[in-house]
Amino acid sequence: MMDTAQALAFLLFAFIAAVTPGPSNAMILSTGAAVGALRGIGCPLGASLGMGVMIVLSAFGLGEILAAAPVVVSVMKIAGSLFLLWLSWKIANAGTFEADGQTRAVGFRQAFLFQWLNPKGWLVALSAGSTYLPSRQYAQTGGALWMGTLFAAAAFPAGLLWLVLGALVAQTLRTQRSARVFNIAMASALALSVVMVWR
Image (cartoon, rainbow, N blue to C red):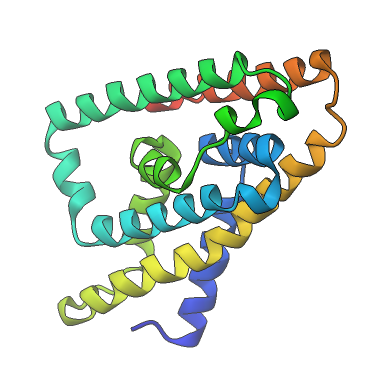
C-alpha cells in the first residue's frame, strides 16, 4: 500500500503522463470532435482502464518478460505500427463531423486495446513500475494494484480534457475544407507516432 504522499506523487505523475500529447490523446481528441463529449465518453474510459491494467501487469513483471523476448517485441511493434497507420488512414479519409462522425469515433473496446499497441503507454507503464513500485516483495502485489487503480483514476479526467477539446474544436469545423484540414492534422500526428515504435 502507498502512503498519502506516495499516492499524491503518483497521481501527479499519472495525470501529467496521461495529459501530455501522444497517440492516445490524438485518438480521444478526434473522437470528441466526431461525436461530442457525451457520446464519446467510452474512448477516454477505455484508454484509462487499458493503461491501468497495463501498469498492473507491467509491475508484476510483464514488461521485463517482453523485453527478454525479442520476437514478441517485434510482433508487437509491427502490430502497433499497422494499427496506428490504419487509424491514421481512417481519420484522414473521414468526411465532415456531422456526416461521418460515427465512423470516426473510437469506442471503449478499441481504446482499451489500443493502449497495448501504444508505445507511449508502454514507456509510461515501465517507468511507473520501476519508479513507484515498493521494493519489498510482500508489498508489490498491493502496490501494483494501487498503481493501476490510481493511474486509471488520474488518466480518465486527463482524457476527458482532450475529449471536450475535440468537441469544442468541432464547433468551428463545419465546412468540408476545415474538417479535412483537421482530419489530416490528426492523421499525420498518429502516423508520425509510428516512429516512436521503432526508436
